[in-house]
Image 1 (cartoon, each protein chain N blue to C red):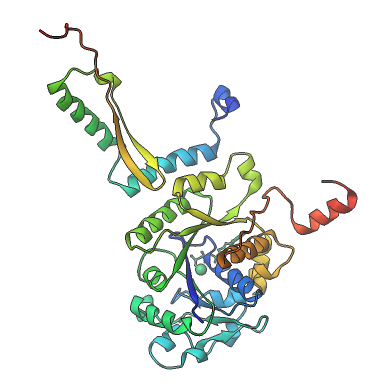
Image 2 (image 1 turned 30 degrees about the vertical axis):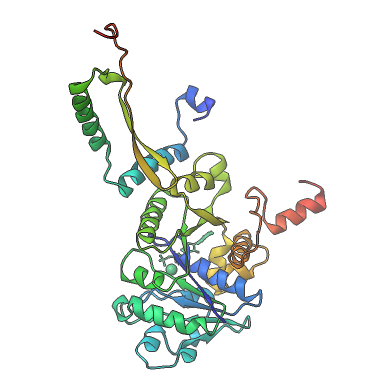
Length: 87
Length: 265
Ligand SMILES: Nc1ncnc2c1ncn2[C@@H]1O[C@H](COP(=O)(O)OP(=O)(O)OP(=O)(O)O)[C@@H](O)[C@H]1O
Ligand SMILES: [Mg+2]
């Protein structure tokens, strides 16, 4: 969005069309929907938290597009250890 | 001779496939190439009227496939240009009258006769589409900068990739530069970014396309028309020339000449 559009809060229709198409094409090309993505995120957090400590609010899962290929990208920041090294 | 077989398809209907086939046929033939255009839309024949050859039809594609005539008999010669032919669709039959393997056989026979076979695919992703892409060496996906047309084009590209037809090239038709500038229409860059395939042509929205259709005189014959120029450019690129993309902002021929005369840019 241009600066002007951002301050007036109005999005041009071409931008809406592009953003909507990005989502719908991802869905058409794969089985991925926003709902599936959310469910996946919750379950991933649950599984990972069983083994290591993470901050659920920092987890980010998204579909990245590269040409006509799409990949699921998970960004899961690890928490710094608070205990002393070596017990 | 060994013709190259090129099919234009789109998913969505009414985006300009028939317009494009007629004009590419004219543009290639006017460069001295021998071209046959095939109307693949059995039951909804239209390429004949767009090319202005509707009064000369005797045999059609189903007659060839079912052996009622020889291939040459169903090839209607376009008298405007030497080396341009049309094989019309049957109007009273349905798409099931022809199979993909019939089309492969027809394609192989035509390869020996001409330089180019251009196939006009019907809309959709069913039998008529499958027939049209079966013999193709190269597929061009044509769309408009419009949300549902782009979505359908993406579906078709996905099917072509799954059928190992190779990656198709894109013709973006009916681009309205004024609207793109106002960001009220998807730009060519937006569409290319979304579909992620190679571009072979951008055709502006042009009122003279309808006038040309009214007259049965494909738009590529109109030297003043911007859409006609765009299709002639695509023909050049098909042949392998490195044709620069035209400036969408530039006004049409007449206006350009007037502004040159009056010194305005
Ligand atoms: N560049 C253009 N500028 C203006 N009008 C256009 C342009 N291209 C096509 N049209 C118009 O769009 C309409 C549909 O064109 P056409 O019949 O070629 O589409 P099609 O994809 O073959 O349709 P179908 O899917 O029904 O076979 C026609 O009225 C034509 O005049
Ligand atoms: Mg058509």
